[in-house]
Image (tube, rainbow, N blue to C red; front, top):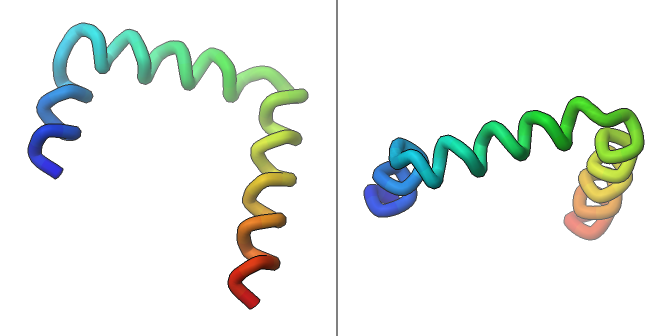
Length: 45
């Protein structure tokens, strides 16, 4: 877990976070993410 936190604080990790936020701002990607979450929730039941 510490390795992940260290990576996310690094410049490369920050770029990855920013790119993820840009992608989530797009409505089509947000809809895809909702579908994935719904599918995963249904599997657990």
